[in-house]
Image (cartoon, rainbow, N blue to C red; front, side, top):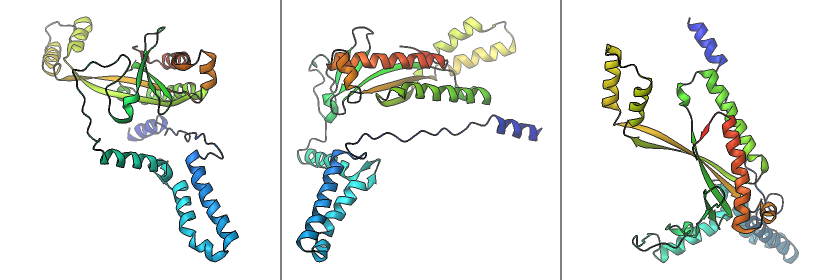
Length: 285
């Protein structure tokens, strides 16, 4: 019996899912503008030292080109050191100006389309799509336009291993279909746990239960009465962020500006919704 169970576990074992590396669009050889500036500074210091004084001057300028190389190539937290420099200077400036605490008058009305958020997120703007009624968030710093779709799905851990394997494969096809265009900057899955009063369990029991006074139905009804008010429900959302730089040509074709970007994002959302339905995931709005 144990050998059969082990064979079944090996047969239906979930395969590890591997994602490809994130594409980095650079100006030259995959390098960003800040990396090119730092590397150019280091190369100029080496060339100038060789022409001016030879090996001795090259040794004197070693701290400059070594620092440039370290700033351009050393990764920390998924970014190069040179990309952390403006973030650090901005944090130091806000610390000196005592702007690390966000205070806002909650009774003061906000202008339409703006969000009361601190720091760089204060520049976020809300755009309501007139065709679908969806609320899209425009980030002028990262040049993205984001929309969110709600998704409902069955409990994954309660499915048998074969069905789990099939669900993982279909979800991989959803990701491949959505990111095929190359215009998606970010795809985020967020799951929240919210308190539930147990009304869903009661309604399900009233529709599908058999309250015949038996011991089983009595125990189940008491369980719903006791555990129902302390229950919880899961809300899953998928956020799709359109890269407005990568989709610049399509945005201009659709009229330009936020209106054109909304039209392009609407196409991406349609593709995502179709892929989700093909993967047997219900879209809630």
